[in-house]
Structures are given as C-alpha cells and as structure tokens.
Image (spheres, rainbow, N blue to C red):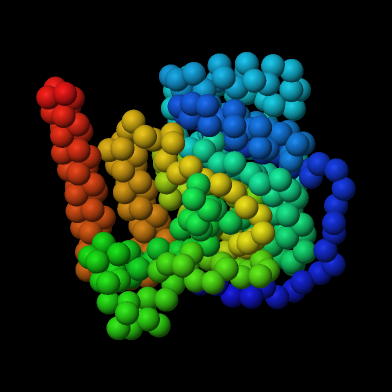
Length: 314
C-alpha cells in the first residue's frame, strides 16, 4: 500500500559520481548486458558484474565494448548459483556507501542513480529505494511499486477473484498500483522490484544480505519484508526512470523460470505468513500456486510443440 513519506530532511543536490556500487547479476543476457552497463557507466563509482555461468556471448560482448574500464569488475561463477546468492557475492566485493542491484535487461535514464541516492538521503529511516520501471513502449511496468502478496492477495489472484474489483474497488485497490496515477514525489510502498533496488550500507548491515534459499524470484519481496520489519522505509521514486526489457535472461527457459518463481512463492508464504493465516487458507494458496505453475508449464509445452510443427510444415 502506498502512503506519503513523513520525516523529510534537507535534500542534497550532490556532486560528481554517487558513492554507489552497482551490482548486476548476469545469465545469458546477450547484448543487453553491455547496453545496461553503457547506461550506467558514469552513474556509479564501481560496477560489479556477477556472471552465473553464462553460455552465450554476453561476457565477450561486454569485454570487447569496455576493454579498459577499471571500475568494471567481473566475477565468474562456475555454476548458476541463483540470483540471490550471486547478489550476495557482489555484496562481498562492493565498497560503496550505497549498493544498487540492477537487472542486465535494464537501461538507466541519465541521472537515475543520483535521483535514487538523493531520495534516500532526503527522508529519515529510509533503507531501500526503487525507481519507475518502464516498458519499452514508455508505459509503467508493474512491480516498481507494489503491495506485498499476502496469502489473501495471492488467493484472490490464483483463483481470478480480482475480476470482481469493479464491484468492490476498495477491497482490491492495491492489486494494480502501477495503474494508479503517478505520484509527484517519492512515496513509501510495501515493496519494490528486484530489477532495480538501491540500499544503504547501514541498512544492509542491520537487515543482512538476501536469502540465498531463493533461486530466482521472490527474494526481493523477502528482503522488502525484512527491511520493513526492522523499521526501514521503502520508497518508490517516480522521477528515477528505468527501461526494463523484462525476461531477457529467461527467454529460452520459460518452464525453468516458472518453476523457480512458484517455488519461491511457496517459500515466501511459509516464511512470513505460516503462523498468521488459517491452515486451510495456506493450503488453498499452495494449491493455487501449483495449479498456476501447471497451467503455465502446459502453455509453454503446447506453444513449443506448436512452433516445432509449424517449422516442419514450413
């Protein structure tokens, strides 16, 4: 749920490159990785790329494009350790006062990082900030400002009950926050997207690193929950713009991605809500999650089969 931020303090314009360590986890992002770094090159003191055993040409393209940039550091993992574990490896190397996590399928608008840092400094008790995620078409993307998917919200989504939102708008108002008017200033939200997250070092030391028990997806929600439980605010900064080409790294592995996404959802619910909701609701939520995964996997299998048939006929 969104709310206006209280506790505003004097805002600093800042000079030069922000004291930010930018951490990018890469896995088969292709040319997008180099494009992402090109948009970030002058916006952070250091850029740390943690590669999860990519098999494409993304690293070769990166090294060819930036052969002499001393503030770009590359860490190669021999196996795909998952997003959260790779982020934590980047954290161990990072030296900045602020740590920013960015997906390799993102392009930063000029001045984006400085705006995020400024917003972080400008409000008391802020631990994490995120910007405005945009589709390539320029429309706002879901996830940049969102409500935590509680078991109730997930139950509603899994069984399609949000279609009743036109009848009871107050009951479902927080399901599509990105469709609400864009705020004119930073606002406090329950969660932001792991595609772009900036945290301060002191908040990080208080909360701890990401939970490496998540392989892919939901680790960002977990972190947001932990930040808020420690009393840190999470801000959505509307004038810090990021174009997000969602899903570039997982285009060739849709069922693999879906499996880990739904598995992460189950871990998230059990970790934070197991003792807050009736067992029958948690069971229904779990059923809904796996039914949704089954439907997603079936769709991709049928789509793949249809494409193969089409190629043979062609």
